[in-house]
Structure formats: C-alpha cells, structure tokens
Length: 250
Length: 383
Image (cartoon, rainbow over all chains, first blue to last red; front, side, top):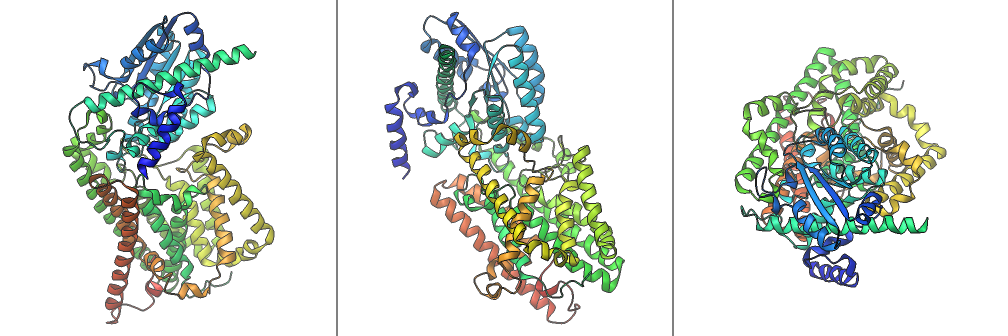
C-alpha cells in the first residue's frame, strides 16, 4: 500500500516538472507546498536583481546549534537553491535564530529586524519552543498576528514556517495545535505558509527519511535541511511569479 | 422540583465509557483509528462528555449522601475522591517522567536538537516535581485530572447550594463562566501561562451536569423534545461538521465567509468556547431523543463493555492515559505501520474493558460481606 502511494505521488510529481526539487525523493511532499498567495516585494526584488531574505527562528534554523557550522542548515542552502533558480539575481539569506525563543519574544526582534535589514521577505520559523513550554495557543496566535502585521507594515513579504514533525517526541510535545495556528494565521493574513510539519510528516510516513533514527550523526539532518531549502526555494519563486502574473492582469 | 430518579441512568455510564475510549484513542499521536472520534466531526470532543457526565454522577451519588447523612459526611467523601484523583495524577506524572528520561538518554538525533528542549525539565527535578505537585506543571495530555481535582475540591459548597436552590447554583455557575471569559480569569501554570482547561470555564459543564442530575433534566425534558429544538440541534451539528471538514481539506477553507470566520475563530478549547458548549448540547438533544432511558440494549451484553468502563471512570481514565503513552512508545520502538496503530488501539480498549471488569469483581467481593451500607455508590457506579 505504502509503495503504491509513493509510486502514485511520484508519478504525479514527474508530470509537473516545475515542482521537482533537486532530490527526487523529497519531492514526494511537494504537493503540500503550494503557492497560494503572491509575494509582491519578492517579485519586485527579483526584477531589481537583488533579493534579500531574512530567516528569523529558533534552533531548528541552525541545525548544529549556535556557533556550529551554519552552512549545513537550510538558510544557507536556501541561498544556493535560490541562486540556481534565479540566475543573475544577487541572493543573500541572513539568519537571526536564537534557541529557546518563543514566538512572542521573536516578535519583538522581528520588528527591529525588518526596519534595520529591509529584506524583501522574512521567513519566520517558530512554534516548537511555544509547544514545549505549552504557551497558551491564543497568546501564540496573537504573537503571530502581530509579527505578520508588523512585517507587512514595514513593506516586507513574509513566509511562515511551522514546527518540525517529530514522531519520537510526539507524545510529550503537542505540536499540532501550534502548527495549525500558524496554518490558520497564514490563511487569515493571506501570506504563504511553509507547512514544515505536514511536509516532514509525509516524509516520515512514506519513509523518505527515517525520522525515528537515534543517530548522533548529522548527515540525515543535513539531507532534511537540503530538502527544506529546495521546497522553500520553489515556494518563493512560484509565489513571486504569482505576484508577477497578478500585476500583468491589472 | 420533582425528586431525582432513584435508579442509576445506564446511559450515563455508556457514554462516559465511550468517551473514555475516545479520549484514549485521541491521546495516541498519529493514530489512524483516532479518525473515528467525534472531535473530527464537530466542535466539541469526548472531554465535554466526560466532564458533563462526571458532574451529573457526582451530584447523583453525593447529592444522596448529602441529603441522607448531612453536609459533613458528603463533603468528606467528595474530598476523599479528590485526593484519590490527585494521587492518580501524580502516579501518571511519574510514568511520564520515566518515559522522557528514557528518551532523553536514547535519542539524540541532531535534527531534533530543538525538540530535545522538552528534557530541560529533567535538569531541574526539584522545580519540576514541586510545580507538578502544585498542579502547575502539567505535561501534554495530562490536563483533565487536575481540572477534575479542582472541580471536586469546590463541589461540596456547590452541591450544598444546588440541593437548596438549584436555579441559584446554576446561575452562579453561568456567572463564574461569564466572568472568567470576560476578565480572562484562569489558574497559573508552569513554566508560564495558564491552565489548558480553565477550571473557571469548564465548571460550567460540570455544574450543568450536576444541575441536570438533581431534577434539571426533567425540567428540561419538554424543551429537549420539542421538534424545533431537535431541528436546530441537527442544523447546528451539520454546520459544525461542515466547518470542521474545511480544517481537513484546506482548499474548502475559502468557502467559509470572512465575516463568519472572523466572528467564529478561534474556537477556544481552554475556555470552553460557547460554540463547543452548544455543540455538546446538540449532541445531548439527539441522544436524549433517540436513546430512551429504558432502552433495552442498555441491558444487552454488547454495550456492557462500555458501561463497565464508564462505571470505573477514574481508574479507566488513568489507565487510558498510560496505555496511550505505552501505545505510542511501542509504535515508535517497533512499528508505525497502520496495522500496528489499529492493533495498539484495539488492544488498549480490550485492556481497559478487562481492567474495568476486574474492578467490578473486586467491588462485588468487597461489598458482599456487608460491611458497607448498600446505598454507597449506587448500582456499582461511582462519581
């Protein structure tokens, strides 16, 4: 059954070449990352040949931890992936990630960052620390709302990235309500969501990655981050195209 | 007001038993069987059923005790019960600690360095244990028993009023709910925030259940059986089903008008959102309408397993929380296949039924010597 589903999804992915990532296997989750909302500031930046991306997040945007090798984590890989997809455009991805920060405390940093960095798009990765600390989901939701509003206000686009799917700690950390809250916030504000939770769950279910592997080595983690970067780059490029298409219609 | 019925209503045990099964299924993460549970088809879930019936049976059992033997004896029995629930909660907490301690030593995948933050609680065992004993630190899926403890702790006073002035008691319950919502009143939690199930809000269901038990149900029966009410209940259940489906099929989310979603969301479980409460009431209207009190099937062998579980709710609830932990642990260690999920779910429910049966057997052998008054815990049931 599982292999049948894999084959079916694989076949679907192959007929839509635009969605095929660098690695065939992580593309099985590509249908979960769809460009629903445009990114007009990114489209503008691409037209001006300079795209500045800022990642605001917690430890899962760092991989090796603070001071570790940052090039292994998805933001650095995103820079490369976007560069390949946008020839001639100068792409920079800067990471502002602090372990153990909740959405509420990131939200304050976020306002400073958009004003000082003036990125075309902010990728806001959050939710896991809130789930661990069991922050009230209403408070979490209002922090997300404020953060998204502040970024849009400062004339940057924003992409929300929800928590990782972690089967091993699922019975201890209730991540789903936070992942859902972000999904809902993205819909309400009409901004793109990188549904990392759903994507990783799909990888886990289809066996793309063995997410229960107790390995201490980083190679599997690096492949996951590469896949995240590829899918994220596709989402950014397609959402920017959506903005371009909308402009043509007007 | 008419005197309350003397015989225990088996429908309560049946639905509480079913609620316990559903809570167990919902507590196993990534469990395909949990698709059958009611939370996927409407706003409210098994927690509402459990809290309402617990309030009902508490008033039924302890109300008799308070009438027959006075306030002090009844209050003492209620507080003894609260103490039992407290001990059960701490027991479950120890099992939880054992599991995270094991995982923290055996799982160090760098991909999940961030998720390992859950083990920070182990680094300060003094604080964690202290906060857990105060019911401020509550791990995931362990929020219902602390709510139950607080509800029972304040129940003697509520029951005293309820037996004298039922409408005043109900009005007080509603007033507390409204004030809690209006002014954001809740108990503090550790490391931060407030309780996941706000006792000031959820007491409404418990109090309403208790009110129904002392004659409120008869008072409402005309209303509950009115065709208009039935129609409204069915319409509301349909509406709720439609909304919930858009959560699982996000493309349909756009079909919900913006004014409606702005008004409706968020549907707050912490504070027992009115939409959830009304959903529960609608289910209750249908249940009362289509399942009569003397429904023959209630005496049949087929419903016996659920009824037996419902009659030992505290033990079976705790067992369910433990079994959900264990099921997830086994799924992670051995297999996550769909067949393993189904097997774990079915095995869990079979174990719950088996233990409930064992408890009934114990109760019978303890009662037979005749040391306890026959009126205690009517018909083998408990509060």
